[in-house]
Length: 193
Length: 138
Image (cartoon, rainbow over all chains, first blue to last red; front, side, top):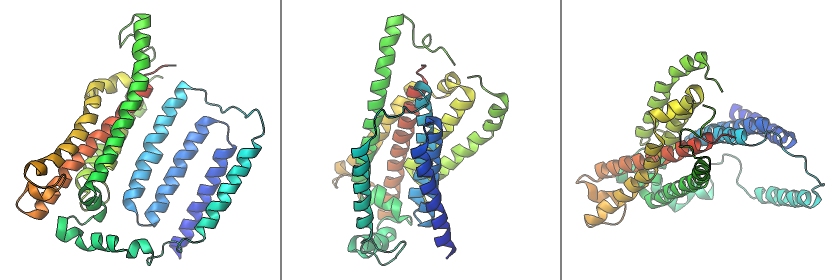
């Protein structure tokens, strides 16, 4: 009962934060609000007993991405431009997608139900029963991620790698060209420490 | 932006605890929540806090950008290389059972090494992106 109450409060707060993000024009406030949104989401994940997901959401969503967006904000303006025309067609598109999503969510099993097809499938039963005999690892999330589905995780790490070198190539290339133009070295370029 | 003395002294107390927590999340991932990805992000967050309080030059003296950029491919190579070792021993790719005699020990060692690879790649990527953004002045 209390758990349902806490979940409702968290979801209401998330809806309020979303409305705040939509209405706000100050990008600094929007970044902070999206960090708060991620933190509320992490709390909901905690309530759903998905502790690994909650930890990732709290550290990546609320931590790193907020900081990265703030550093980006330092390089750009901190105020969102007012749109020059009334976005009527996007509004109808958004309402249409929302109606379809709500209609789709009607078929979902009840919130937090244990007897769902996912929980009772042969695959999840196998992992839950075989994790300790096969691998000796009590945390099934870890044994699935790193052992049973290790190849998938290798793909994920490769995605992180590609994203990293992509960003570095885009940002570093510009800086080097600029440094050659002004004739200063790597350290001479930085003006404000 | 001028570094603030109170923030510097206050944040100094936090760094060891954040780093120990990251290592706990890393090596206790077999038993509790967490793993290489979360530990990588947490340790990157520690360095970001250091950069915010002490400035970018100080952070880049402590953790040079060259090292950070080396961590990303080394992490992926540790992961992929751990997969190759069982192949050389006559098993499938990433099948840790070939690593050791005892099957559960082999699995635990395989997972441990692979998670270190994930830690290096994720922490390196996060720090490198942060360095790249904060190194640019307007």
